[in-house]
Image 1 (cartoon, rainbow, N blue to C red):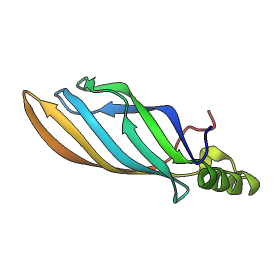
Image 2 (cartoon, rainbow, N blue to C red):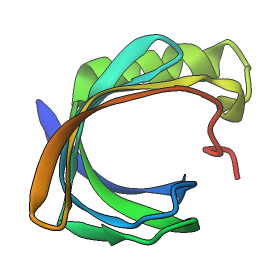
Image 3 (tube, rainbow, N blue to C red):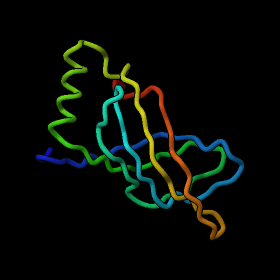
Length: 116
């Protein structure tokens, strides 16, 4: 990890319930853990999303190292399981299909599998 900023590669497991596939061209979002901003995520490369299937999105997490470590230390110090910490993701994605591109809001709030 670097100081004052670090980059971490992560993969998000997702499911596309739609009957059509599309291309995910870009994604920029804020990532919070337990309601504390952890950093910003961005798409590492464009990605073809299959229809009605699961897929992984390779993301780059850009964090402020000191603040993120303080947040994580506070959570771990409370002796809570990190897998219980809720994740929030809020941002925007650029989706493309048949040459038509749209900006789509990304909003997720829920559980994680960080402890697994």
